[in-house]
Image 1 (cartoon, helix red, strand yellow):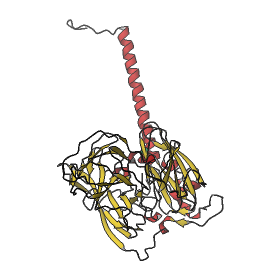
Image 2 (cartoon, helix red, strand yellow):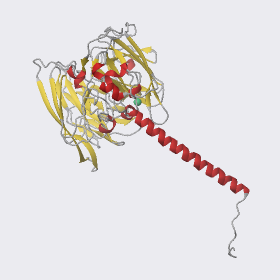
Image 3 (spheres, protein in one colour):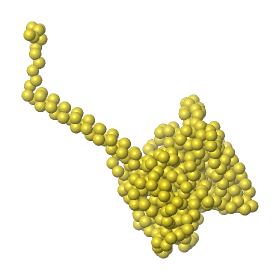
Image 4 (cartoon, helix red, strand yellow):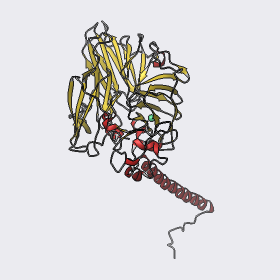
Length: 515
Ligand SMILES: [Cu+2]
């Protein structure tokens, strides 16, 4: 019996139809969501294999599935060279520099997870080196032996230090699971290498890099030249850094930073981009030269003005300029994703006008060339093409695959190697190669007219670059995107020398996750 005051609700045909449609949509969306969740888990598991021996990747068709078997049998594995001849193996761990009579420079770095307060008053949970992020600048002179004792106080997943851009022996490259085990809490590891090339470099953890570098395990490494190739009175260095997703800092500061300089003084300004995004740097107040990129001096650098410098993630740009008489030099940076960094002021005179930059600095048309035997016409022993792309949602790929599924580029000592790289997706992929410095030969099919050497090359959507290097440093070397999130989602591969082995493994079993 119905209450007299109520009207029994009756659904019209039309309403029923819509309800049915609504329920169908909910079920469809729910199903899609469940599938997506399942798929994401699958993809992420694929990112982090159980156990892979990086020195044996080329010997097995299926890199991940029979990993434990591979591990157990690794001592019996036969290594061959390109022509199939059985060769003696050498372990990455045995490849070290001979100190000789080089001057030893010793440093201590202690990694510690702790809360620090920024100069804007905010407290952050950071990973620090000697209590700060970035860690201390390591500054040595070309030819010296750098000895760094790394201690891990309490970073649970373990830490390493990779020396970005430095050509050093395999055992010192600091890649977890490739050249060493991650240093556990309470543990330590001593790095030792000869700083052969002068230039601006940096260091960062290569264990869970995308997490640890953004939480603070980074720092600068400056190798001063024995003889200055050009004159300057002040040598200033800055690190452009993003803490977490959005705290932009320069030399640990969220506020503008000032360097005192007298009018007429010559300044060498070293800029390290430790962020995962390109930093576009405008220079106001005077003209300047870009004297060095990634630690390699540019021959015949021209004087430029009002150009925006696109410093790729992981790259270093060194500028040379004279402080003007009437105004200071002001540098203003903003990231690829439009985050502003603090300004850099050099000198005390009045502020320059912040004009409009006339264009973007183009390294492919900058400097001169002194033929050094490496050109598009060289006879290459190895030629590879890498397509940088993306699989739906989560994975960043090279030739359609992710890290441990990507066959390594195999080289022999002495090979001349050419790699073409195309960004077939969107965004920028700053591609970094460990253990070598490469020459940029062409961009979008147009040969460079200058000698530009780099260790990290930002490649924007649709662009193709050809790069070349001499395989002169036997080892197991990562080649990966320095947008660290991309690297962690798969855009990482190896350039391996035939016959080089490693006792370490990458994966969830060992806990070595180099990203
Ligand atoms: Cu990338």
